[in-house]
Image 1 (cartoon, rainbow, N blue to C red):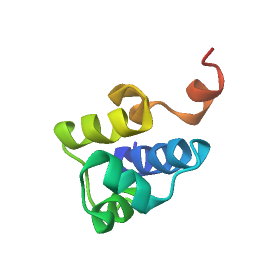
Image 2: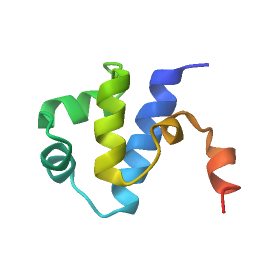
Image 3: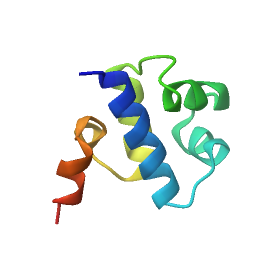
Image 4: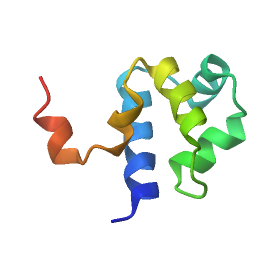
Length: 76
C-alpha cells in the first residue's frame, strides 16, 4: 500500500472539505506552504509530529490521514 498517497489524498480532501487553501492550512498549522504542497502531492512523508499539527489545524484525528476512502465514507 502506498501510504504517502493515502495520506496525501486525505490531507487534500480534509483541507478542501473545510474550505481552506494550502496557504491557510500552512498558517494554521505553523508550517511552510511549500511543505503542505509537497505532502499533498506525495513528494514527502510527514512526521508524526507534523501530522499532529496538520490534524489540529483541520480538526481531525491524526489517524484519519491513514483511513482508506471506503472507511472514510462509512464514518458517522
